[in-house]
Image (tube, helix red, strand yellow):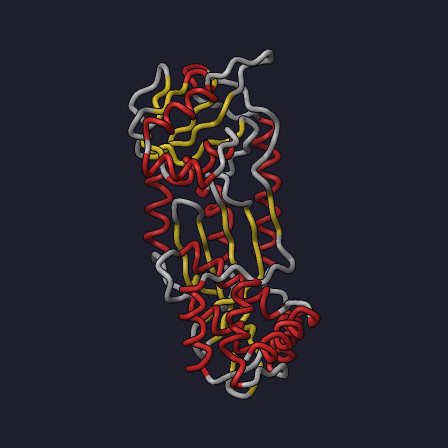
Length: 356
């Protein structure tokens, strides 16, 4: 499992961001992209630097193909500004469209729907951390806050089992939230493998809350004010998250996941077809060519030529990648590989044998 910040560092950064961030609800006709890719808004100072996430959301909202948008960003910023401004200011017969702008340190970090429901990292952390601190045997194994998400990964050393002799795994959970439209608030089961500190994120038993609600009202001087009904709904959901964290390390769910791992150890891969099996698996599950090389190295070095070994090689490689976001995605990918349909796995094995 990739290491991020300490829990204390996470708390400090969450508080810093809470004090520094500002949200605005603005009509698109009041926005202007400059030739250097920044965003200017009538009546607001300063000019906002647009990060990669917000650029992608602007392009998606305006229905500009992503490859063309990125080509303009890199090769013709004036043309990008012309395209974006044309569509932002296009007259409509209905009420002028509005977007929620989420900013931090004068950076535009998200360009979202006016129905976007804000559930901030502060509220999530304040809800779950007291619960975790009271859980006997629980520890925060890894946590981080990136441009995309906040992550809190918890392991409970009191609940453990063996996949095979000497291969001990422990139960855990991962809590995530995105303030920029890159995912719901969620609580998911996690398996922590002691022998190599791998984390594997299960898709089963998730508690999720989408950031979508009623249309927000435009506030005085563009700021957004929360509706009491929405806040009450959010509080109710956060209590559900709290309860989910309290009960998340479920022995029954954990044992079922461990049994899936044991079953995967019995599905062997012929040594001669290992590179091809890994290539086909990577292609099926969105692992890049460069990533596949790293995963293959861990699979061979680990010596476990089975479906279980393939999944563990992916989660082991997750520790090597620079991006914490991508690392966590690979931890979830490892579980998807482990639990793929037998028909798909047999097809991969069969194709690999034929092509060797």
